[in-house]
Length: 446
Ligand code: GDP
Image 1 (tube, helix red, strand yellow):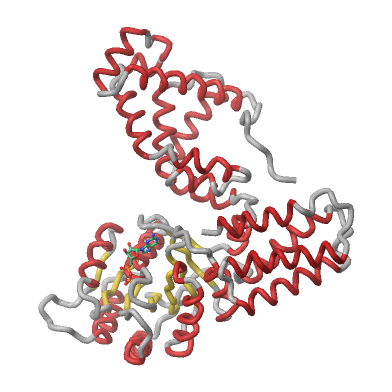
Image 2 (cartoon, rainbow, N blue to C red):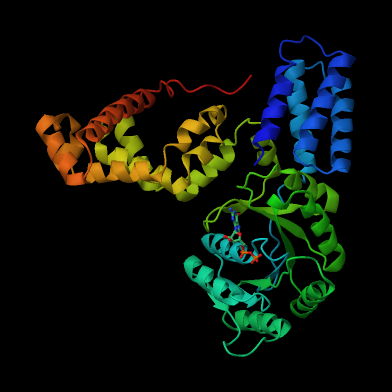
């Protein structure tokens, strides 16, 4: 989402590299470039103005004299200012003292509310909560069914009006849902409400009525980050019409320029709490301003990566593999290789992961070609090997390769490539286990 902005800022900083001190003219030129970069990214004008003024003032000030060189200092300032406009601290969900905690979702139709309701429910469930979804969007045909389907995928209970009950009363459904949750000991209730394609008074009224009826602990305004500047206008209208505690940005995986994400917290004074970045139920997390800023500046986002890895990786298996290598108790086998591939797949697309590792975004295009199907092919080939071959790949001679190719429906050349790749990976794993670091991996930018 922030590719163009990242590139622009990177080239701005590049221009400062090697400078012993920044002249007034350097600072002016840098400020101008940052201004253009932000405007091109669709950031709201008042936000851009404040941002540039703050950077300029700080760059001119005494800050430029410490241990960092001027270019690093400017990156640091821009980073800190980005974190500030993104809302500063991570805003976490506030739970009610007496359960259930009631969370109400509001936003336009198509913002991604229904999808988000299920994502949030799954996220809560993963943290040990027992959430219930309430389908109070009775406006959009299918919204109830969609929530039921998504709820089922997330493995959470959905409270919905009885089918055939006509249009129904969303306020009554919402209220009934909260009562049901209290009775059945669900500790969090997520109320999905109706949206329209555009703003209208009736929509605002309905949302306000539901809010008054269920007294939510958190009202979350859900907005599609792809709608650019309109996101800010819509956010303002909902703030005036319904009111909310925090914002949820959806579709951050899209290729919009990201201005909405950068403007909304500052313009509304409400923090962004969650971000949704894909169609899968797990493409969802707390929004961390510092990490987002780091990602925009392409300084990597190791924390997010580590957290995601922890969430999806099979820790036991990873530990076993690591112990095996470190203790010299065995060799990295094709079974380990396959399980690593499968772990990587659980993390999401490789190009997405690459975006979070410092310096890796340059390989994005290559990684885009390495897709899920590639892993399927590798899996098919490895599954056609005997256990002995997988444990000791050196056994795999010409005639075995032909048999494996036939069994997996692949060409012999595919088997050859895989075996070569495996031996390369093993070499790398062994050198890492000896503490040699990852060969060919560029370090953090200076
Ligand atoms: P609602 O009308 O606000 O309930 O919106 P929906 O939940 O029905 O979402 C509208 C569309 O956006 C659906 O096609 C979703 O699959 C899609 N969608 C929702 N969240 C995301 C996201 O984070 N990324 C992408 N790419 N699509 C999303």
